[in-house]
Image (cartoon, rainbow, N blue to C red; front, side, top):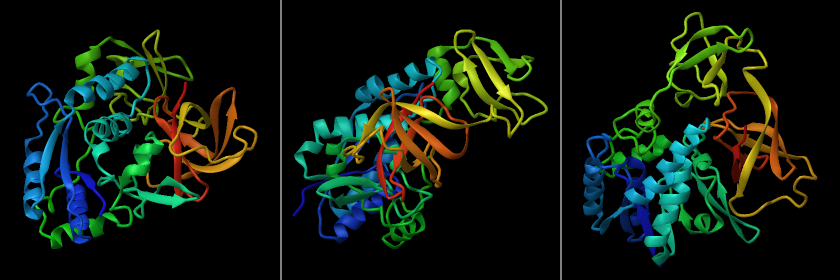
Length: 355
């Protein structure tokens, strides 16, 4: 029988994973990964999560171990976030958490002792052509392959996604029927390390404030003031404090600390049709015989949405270039362009959107 480790968060999804594995006759070892900065200053505490995880473990008579990866998380994911924000990028800490901590540090410390690690992510494993690929989930609203698109071949080969064939309502019903301790718990929102503080307060703690101008791109007119370009991201609409909108952030001058905005919803400043990606990560392998020579049709995402967009991928000057068949609003450097096959069945990987 397979030797399985299961990551248990205290939420309903990972609890249902435990239930499903036990229903199949497995007795997985359970692990809670502690990553949030556990102090009043950060407003983050794992107590409630751990209590619910312990209750689930007790229900099924399984061992639960708390793995403290706070330092590793801080040194890798939090530092990555601050570094990217300070340079004007829009980072994605959840993507890097999966790659570096949940399936990186955990594998190094614990996971290597097991055949597989099961997780509550909405994704699937596809075994095809002698390889293991990251597949999309049944539920398009919950599909999390875009958050997993930086993992490695080794990581995907060792991961189990028991929820990949379910929609969220089915998972919730399983939890209710099984009377799981987390059955009525709401889904978590936001970035995992922030706890009770908001993103801008977190950024302010490390980068402070520096007043700059908000300028209308088309006219050069100063419309207002901001407290630092690092508080704003491309495509942002809310939080600008400007009248007569809607206004959208369309670009930033990092050296001059200027945030440029545009009001015209259909202007070229609002939309783009292509972008370059740096440091592209193929999860399993590059599936194309002539990368860069053939203009390959793909599906892709540039943010976490249930919809996929059609585009064409080529390689130019060592970087992957994506041309979209439709206009894209808010192409934000630092976010990841996530690439799928033309049927949106397999997630091939992702690259960081470049300036």
